[in-house]
Image (cartoon, rainbow, N blue to C red):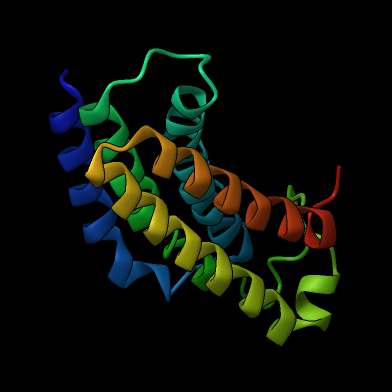
Length: 150
């Protein structure tokens, strides 16, 4: 399957699931949803980061497509941090529910950086991509340090 076809399939499936995201039947459904969205985002971001660090050959088309997917998916997981979803198979720290404004600030900042990464990747300029990867990765780390269990 081509990357473009994978991208569109992923986006279509996620778009179909968005209306249901706000209505999780049980907390485990919310956990599964956010883990899935975060996994897809991480996989696509990592592909671009590998190119930026020289660990993978730079392919401007793949970088742009992967960054676009990561940008789109970066908006999805936050609705799934619902009441009751702090229990179960999750790496989320309880502070997420104690500090919702700060958690939202971190997620908003990451989404903003992910959008910048997508724009940089569309430009095809590797130096711009490297800068954006560093900034985006930094926002991920800040949130993980505060709100993710090891």
